[in-house]
Image (cartoon, rainbow, N blue to C red; front, side):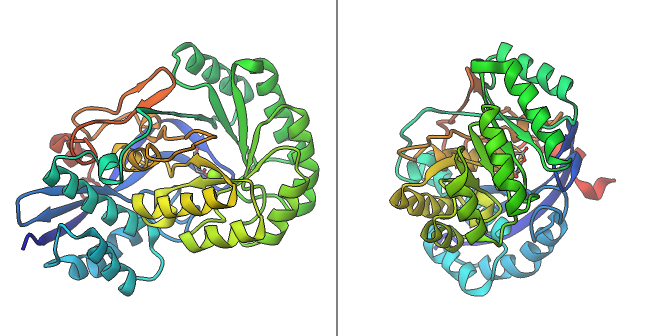
Length: 373
Ligand code: MUC
Ligand code: MG
């Protein structure tokens, strides 16, 4: 039998092109957790578990992900059949509660290895892609309206992005809404503008603000209120003139079912990290599709490995009405892959090589490894 021989996790710190300001945290760098899964047939699978701002976004930090992978996941997986992803992930599921970021990295690494083994790109392993590329939104989060406008103009000129997500919630709603309205006024019909509130508003504030954002021409409002209040999200969603998207509210496939049942949102942000991997995210997508909920391909600002793991999965979806925000690698100044991902004509292209379609640059990886510093 071809078995899993080792599972190694590496913390890599990479600089960002500028500070990235979210309501709960300002990123000055991004920290990736890279998984290397080695199999007895000599094949290595790669995975990534990346979050935002230590513990400020979700319940797993890069350090806890590494500890849990090394201490709990590795002993569960070593010696198991490397070619049976269902059985390996079932074993993980039976023994590990939560920890969807770490699970996502492991599922990705198993799929990457299997794809390389069978000579199939990951999207083919998942049933086959129905599109060659994915439109990618860019997040304007410099913290300054003029700079954001300049950045958006530059992205339009480069034909890299024509959908922009604005991170709000760090300021008073009136100030945030004026910032959004100024950007939308300048960009007009040349671009779509969406906002992400990252759970900051109360229901009362959200009800008023959604109206004002609608008047300003915003086309999508992401997670306006705290994740746990599904009923309030449903009320805001029902009264908002703009579609409301659930992001942090989804921390598992089961959460997505509960949200669909409660009618909490008309769009779901799919993230491999929040549901436990590329296959798990497709289960969330199926729930949404059955409930008539629109789909958006979200990110935790992963590097190239996590970004492509999500891209292969999203490329298999029949409908991806709201496109994606798979721009994580473009926020980083450094690359740890031997070839960067290809962004062209507003799209991220899906590689055709077996597995994820990436190769690590061992020297760059070694240079940015946290243990070196
Ligand atoms: C989030 O909340 O959606 C995605 C894009 C971005 O700038 O931040 C992330 C997280
Ligand atoms: Mg979000």
